Length: 395
Ligand code: FDA
Image (cartoon, rainbow, N blue to C red; front, side, top):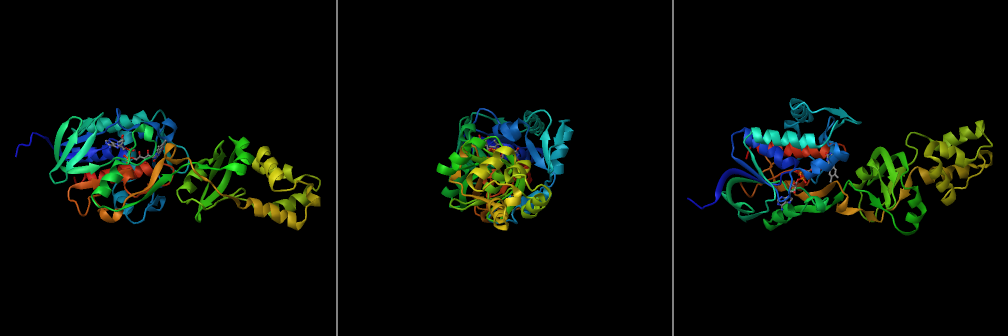
């Protein structure tokens, strides 16, 4: 039937990490693939990621690095597209990279290298990519009919790769979540994650001038702990440990920050009291926590006095205050600065092997729009690559 619409095998909405990887995999299989994005450039989040150097994967990615209502969902896709598969692509294009820490791989030069790889692979696989192209789904099939900024499109497989809400000024929308809800699919509640937390009122006034100070800690929320740095900011707290813990934090609950993750602080103080009895508590804490933080702790919650005047109760007080130091965030900085959206299209409605919707044949959801959220450190891109690749084998 001639509908006047352009015919393709696969239409993908969203030219981000997941959409482009899906397009490459499908194009290599000989499928006619069209990728459309309403933004004026592809892969804007890739470009801004990793401080401009894109932490494109993590050597140690396992299913345990992901949060989802169904923690088993990620297993199939991750096992079929590993960090080494993506590293193979990076090496094929001779893009220099390095491990920064904890298995996190970054580009030596710029995130632009990753976008270049993806576009070169799309071109080699015969994939067409359109930017400045808003899309609405007119009729769900298959065949599916789409209204786009470049005319009508008809496709057998439709892939939703529109990402999450974070960084709206980069083109992020809730399109994928809204579309799923319209179809009656379950969507797990969404909220900003991998995001700095805010403090208010007296607590903020007490700490705001520590802005810029960073400390090695073990920070936990809801019983899940991360051994990383925290960073004081003029709005509250950030740094990798806080970002990680924010994904487990719920409004109204505390975060616990162990300021001496490797140290029995009570024993340390007793030993220091034996060896340097005239030294003040503030001085001992300065060696461990920086002078500014030690001073603030002593102004607010501890009494600094020479160690030989400290009683067992005083030493207990230090331990109770700092191990952990309990904070009650007033909120987070929200989607404006969050790296990811927690929650999303419920995995119960999707095949973990192909990402296809159980109730709507030929419709797929991949990447961040799905209720899968990785820890900090390259795991989110690994999910985008793996879920995109899984769908790309089937569309
Ligand atoms: P992504 O958001 O990449 O792509 C979605 C695309 O859909 C966008 O191009 C958007 O314009 C388009 N779109 C949205 N709505 C549309 C509509 N209605 N019509 C048409 N197009 C539409 N992760 C990591 O592993 N390592 C890192 O270093 C970082 N760093 C980082 C820094 C910052 C500042 C942020 C915000 C995020 C990160 N991340 C990260 C997270 C990572 O960027 C994210 O998990 C992936 O980009 C998700 O890939 P997707 O393809 O699912 O969505």
